[in-house]
Length: 381
Image 1: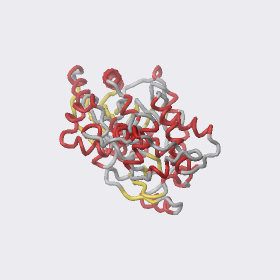
Image 2: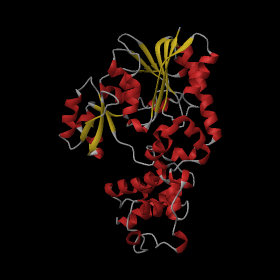
Image 3: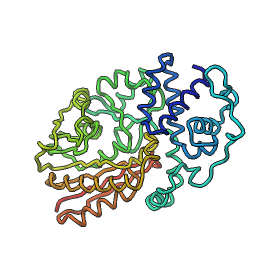
Image 4: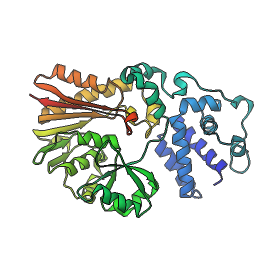
């Protein structure tokens, strides 16, 4: 595909996303219908789509409108590309821009790609870091790996990855975290990954697990396990009896294979079979994902006040369920930047649930190097 054809493909995918289709689904459908597109083409179109979604407001301003064409046109202008050479109308390239697509420079919240309605809450939560954090959320997220210390040392994992063209550097957020500096697309096919030496996991997520009060012999429940990234990280930290649960068990479908690759044992349990008490319950609750908008940028634009209210109600329910299952500790975590989902939920839990206290708290934003995360350690007295 020519660069112009890639731009046109991104336009068609973005039109579907703006009409309500999930970005991953829209990209998959395009790829299946475009057998001529090679792996390099698919990667380039994917990058254009996600870069445009990260900068949806500013790109729309620069491109003359909030359409797939406007977003790609604005993104390319922002990147300093030669738009005239890409929008030629020849072959499969998009037509040249018209006078109505001249665009304008974005300003204020538009330039930060921040939804207007969320700005007050984000300013209150982030304080003087608001503009800097919002600016980082317009960029691509780094790729991080977690070294599985049951299989390799950090240095050993780095050497194994380097031998296959994957460059890494140590990240200070966690002693198992490596930031990928070269060859990210080679990770999933590398022997280091297939043999369980490393797992894909954000550095801030690893920092959350590193802060948990784990020790050998504990019984631990990962109550909202999802794909099991934190489950596996906990299993590598201490010799614990580990149970994984999710309200939707389908999210854990890959966990048995991942656990086998990592060399750990995890018991998967459905809600009806959960029996406490556990020494520690990790409640990594469903949230807005605002701390990870670099990875899932469409979530920024699909969050609404009603959806946020539903999420905070779910978070309260998760904390109450965790309390009923815990005999000692609850670790409440989100990948949100919003106090309404973080400290406010911990405070509300303590206010309605006698016998618990806040034993520790940690907040991370993209300024710390990884995703935004919040952790509250709650102790039964």
